[in-house]
Amino acid sequence: MKKEILVADKTYWIGYIDNRNVPFHRLILEKGTTYNSYLLKTEKPTVIDTVDISFGRQFIESLSEYINPQEIEYIVINHVEPDHSGGLPLLANKAKNAVIVTTELGAKELKDMYKLHNREFIIVKDGDTLDIGGKTLKFFETPYLHTEETMITYCVEDKALYSCDIFSSHVATYDLFNDLSKDDITPDFEGYYKLIMHPHRPYVQDMIKKVRKLDINLIAPSHGYILRENVKTFIDIYDEKSKPVGKNKKALIIYSTMTGNTKKIANYLSIGLNEKDIDVELINVKTDIDMKKIKESIEKSDLILFGSSTRYGDIVGGIEEILKEIKHMNLSSKLAIAFGSYGWSGEAIEVINDYLKDTNMNVIESSYMIKTTGMNDIMLPIRVKFNPSENDIENLKHTARTIGDLLIG
Ligand code: FEO
Image (spheres, rainbow, N blue to C red):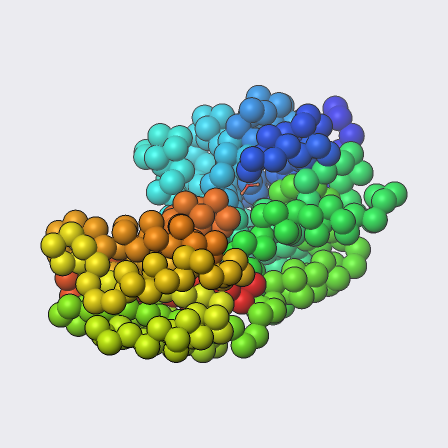
């Protein structure tokens, strides 16, 4: 038997140390990583998270050193990405009666990914608990940390937080516990935060509020070091680094409207930005344009949204004149977004976007959001067909809040 790695009472590390140069999110993890999985050998034996999909066989071997996998009653999946759920198909095959515990979205994704439609699931929500025979697990939803379906699991009796991606580090360490490391682990811990968590910093703040209410002696994440010394310091690092830093940011929403729908879009975007304490100036461009005043407003703003309705496949009002005029201004520090209402194709929105790309502003589009945050529910440029529906209104405010977070850093 390999050396037993005890994490807490009757709780064992059954992960895999991956000391390759691991390709990850368009980077190479030169220090490798670990995929930490945990066996809670209680009356109802429970596995929390698994390992990368490449190491399923080794995972089952490690688990089998401690228990016959058929005895597993619960498999908790905190996060569906295959570096943590990748051992699930093999484990589920061995532990035929085990119930899978995860969030509603997690269950949907796991069923689709691994063809687990016939398995029994327990869907958990924020604050739900599960008695695993001698220990109590409590679950908290932590969306977007790292993807939308994610949750964390707290063991009440052990005061242990199983945080999956959160509070991780990418290091192929054989020490496993932070107090055993000969090196200061802080640079690796902070580097991981910057790469994986910081793009989702508003969600980090939501998570911190939940975690602060727990009495935590141990954080057992799913990559890198298990934290059992100076635990609060690591929570404080996340808290400090995810706080908004940009105060007094300004946005300008400048638009032309045909029937009033683009004006409504502008107003809902303004509401979402205001919720993030961003000052918003709205300019409805009519045919008589005060170009000097508009250029001054653009100079003063950190984010500029240009909008127009589409009529006969083209921009309406004076927006095009403004776009031509600003082409030669130095606006390199500013973010820009196109928006508008439309009835059929919405060409004006795309034409505005083309003009913006011809300036030196940073034009924000959906692809940028996906690459920087992984969020794929933000549609940019912003397009709304006819009169904004209730659903459109919620999307517009959500989009504005998300852009606001991007602006305030
Ligand atoms: Fe370690 Fe989001 O996966």
